[in-house]
Image 1 (cartoon, rainbow, N blue to C red):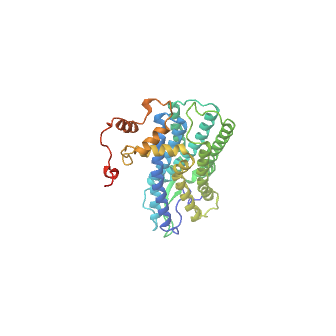
Image 2: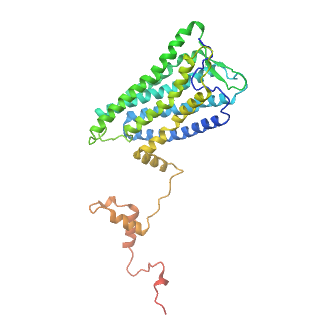
Image 3: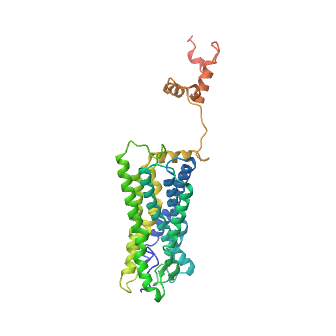
Length: 368
């Protein structure tokens, strides 16, 4: 067993990236935190008000939580590793093992969440029904437990490793000699359990849901509560996540299937894997905002409700008030009239006939 194999694909392996790559990763982390915070606020508001599909909203919240955890817990060790370029890393073995285990655990949770979203969308297309919050919570707990247990060997057998002078710090997967056969089996089975199987479930669920919803366009969704997210947008986000994770798996198999002594994957492949993983964590809010008009409206409504964005309501101008009254239906009840418009016309009707109310009387006086 080659003891120099990295603990997780995408580990820094060269100093050729300079300061550009850490800057790009830091910008993606900040953008991902801001975007996912807004997306989580919109989804939490949907769940609280009972709008849309609760299963979809909770599973998307789970994806947001994984992306936030990636930015807060997995990105800083990555940046620190790029900053240390002079010999062995100074991180402790425990920090190295935690960093090598947490990143694939978060990505595995996202992968399983997208598979569960495909299943939920298929169920919604077949027979719209309410979901039990207790069952959803139990399912999310089981999902995270499975995602955290799958990469457990990385937590047990990763060690800090220093390379030649000028190379950044690395976390190497170094199992004991008597566990070499287990490590080889784990290197092959883990991609199947964390990536291939969830991807197949996702494609099957979304594909069948798209066919059902296309054939029944006239059918109302979710018992009168349509989902604000189209299956096409969710399928696009799922495919984007799987494509962004693919270079990391190529690097994973490169390290474990290469000849002994071949070393880590090429630096360009490792850097591409890092950038794409954190780019995907920042993309879902922007993609949903671009693909769903209902989501954009709810986001604007949320922003208008913030204290910094709230504006004092002003009375409409006379022309605007008259136009608003003309646009009201003839059979509209009196209590539906806009309060500001009603107040304006009430003041006009209460003005006495002989009362001087012209604001510019000199313009209407006769010339001498």
